[in-house]
Image 1 (cartoon, rainbow, N blue to C red):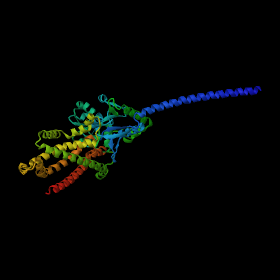
Image 2 (tube, one colour):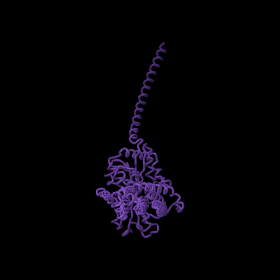
Image 3 (cartoon, rainbow, N blue to C red):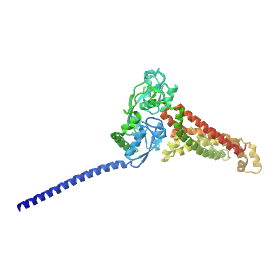
Image 4 (cartoon, rainbow, N blue to C red):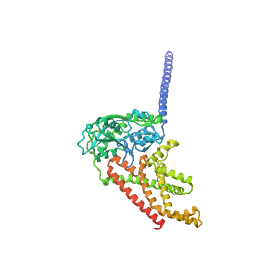
Length: 506
C-alpha cells in the first residue's frame, strides 16, 4: 500500500516536471519565434522600401572595364555586374541609361535618372552635391605613352608637353594637380578611347587615366604602354542627388555588403581584373588582334541597329521640319506683319544657337521645368526638326521670292486672290526652285543626327563609340561608319532626286 502511494507520488511529480519543462520549452520557442519574426519583419521592412521598384541608373558609355558593351550590344563591366547583382539581392529592378559621364550627371540632376554609377570618385566637392554609397572600388592613376615612344620615362620628362586626361575623372584631377610641378599642359576630353588615339596620333604626348581602365585598354591592344607605377587614388561610389533616393542608396549599401560577404563581389572583380582583383601594369598587347573582316562581322549588328535608328529619327524629324518650313515660310512672306515677325524670331533663335544646346535643353532642361521626364526619341525629334525647320523656312521664303514678281501681279490682274495666286501660280514654280535645297537639308539632317549621341540616343555614331570603347579599334570602326554614312546618303540623295524629277517632270 505504501509502495503504491509512493509510486503514485513519483508519477505525479514526474508529470509536473514534464509540464513545467514543456511550458519552458514553449516559452523559449515563442521568444525565439518572436525574435525570428522581428528579424524577418525588419528585413522585410528594409527590402520593402525598394522591393519591386524600378530605378533609372545613368552611366558612362566608354569606361571599360567598368562599363562598356560586349559583342552582343549588352552593357557589361564591373559597375554593370555589381549593380545588377545588388538589384537582384535587394529585389529591385534597374534601367540603364548609357549617356557619357557628364551627361549622366546632368540626367540625374534633371530627374531623368535616379542614380549614377560610372567609376565616379568620391570627393568632398561632389559630396556637397551628391550622396554616395559605401566605396565599391579603390582606384588610382597611371601614365601611359605610345608604344613606340622611348623618350618619356616618367613625369619629369613631360616639360613643355601635352598630357590628355578624361573630363571629370580621377586622372584629370591628378594631371591638373601636378601640371605646374612638371611643366606640362593638360587637355581634357570625354572618352578614354579618344585619349588613347590622341597619344597614338601624336596630338598628345602622354595620357593619365584610372589604372584599371588604362591597363584594360593596353591588354585590348590600344597601342600604349605604361611608364609609371600606379599612384593610389580615391574610392568609387554609387551616387544619388543630395537628400533624394535614400532608400536606393541604403539598398545599394546593403546589397554590396551581402555580395562581399558571399564572395560574389570578388568573383565580379576577378572576371574583369584577374584573380588578384587588380590590374598589373602592362607594356604590350596581350591579346591577339582581330582582322578587319572579323571586326566588321562583330560590329555589323550594332552598326545596323544604329543605322536604323538614324534613318528613322531623320525621317520623323524631316516630316515635322518640312511642315514647319512650309507653313512658317508662307507666313514669312505674307503681308501679315505680326505673323511674319513670329516666323522671323523662330528662324533667328534656332539658326543662331548650336543644335547641341537644344538637345541638352529638351532632354535635360525641360524635365526640370515640367517635372516629368521626356522620351529620348521625342527629345531627338524636337531637336532635329526645330533646328532644320528654321533653315527650311528660309529655303521656302527664298524659293517664293525667287519667282518673278510679275507673276503675282499678272495673276492678280486676272482676278485671282492673293491665296489663289500663291497656290496656282507662285508655289508650283517655287517648288521647282526650292527642291534641290530641301534635299540638301535632308542630307544635313541625316548627318546632324550624330550629335544626338551626346544625350545617349542610339544612332550610328553612338553605336560605333560603344564598339571602339571595348576593342579600342577607333580608326577601323570609324572607317566602317564613314562608309555606311556615304552609302546611306548616296542612296537617299538618289531616291530624293527621283522623287524631284517625277514631281517637277524635268
